[in-house]
Image (cartoon, rainbow, N blue to C red):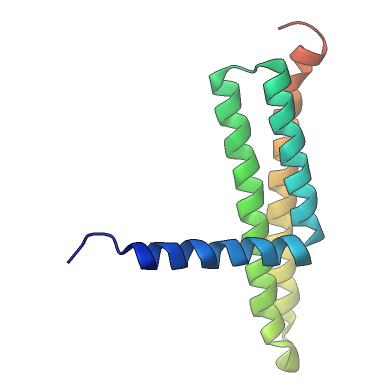
Length: 123
């Protein structure tokens, strides 16, 4: 008996990749956030941000992307209830979208706080 079954691990990665592809194809917000993350990564390289700044930026990018994926899951689950639409379905969708919005706004503020000194030549 091995500790890790390589076949199972590879299946898990394949399922995760399928989830990524699904979100990328179906969720415009996810595509925008991926594009924004790529821009931030390029800016990190161009400006040579400190390791602490890089860690903060990466964590913020991951937070927004993960929340968007969780939002997608809740939307899909709520849509299952369509034949018996309940007022809570709208609330669930709105609240999860709000969580993504708050995280996105926070990430923009953090990005500005980190990159502004570089743009102004003060670092």
